[in-house]
Length: 167
Image 1: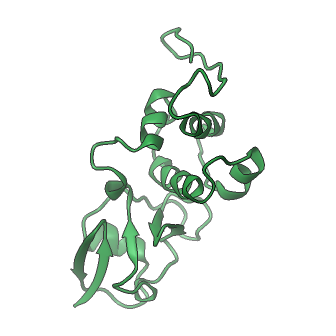
Image 2 (image 1 turned 135 degrees about the vertical axis):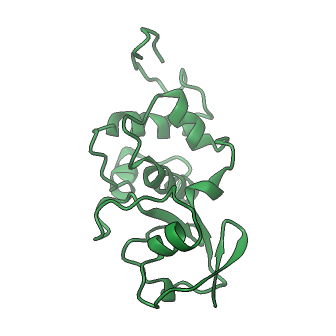
């Protein structure tokens, strides 16, 4: 059996070498937070980290990932939603349908690890995931909230929520 290091655990699986990592994660290992969106690495719904790098798994053959490489999925980012990016997502009501959000969160966490205080140009260059609901402004705002240490006031936002409150 082949092995992968996923979310800190060595997992065994059986799959053809050219099977996309996405399908091994979802079907063999049972981690369904990583989504299938396009199958051509354009939308980013399938994004995970491999050794800290945001990687689109729908086109990455499982045979190209060694057992020594560390794969982190949305389930491994934080088991209880306590990661600062996840907190900012919830605080700002970022998701609408939510389908792309696990990949978006993984892309954002990789960006913030590489650039803890990204400029708008850095965000534009790194976050190329597609959100069909168009939550890009809230995503950018959430990134700025994380950079501001979770403080929505110091992030200088003016978001009106459905309940009438503002952030």
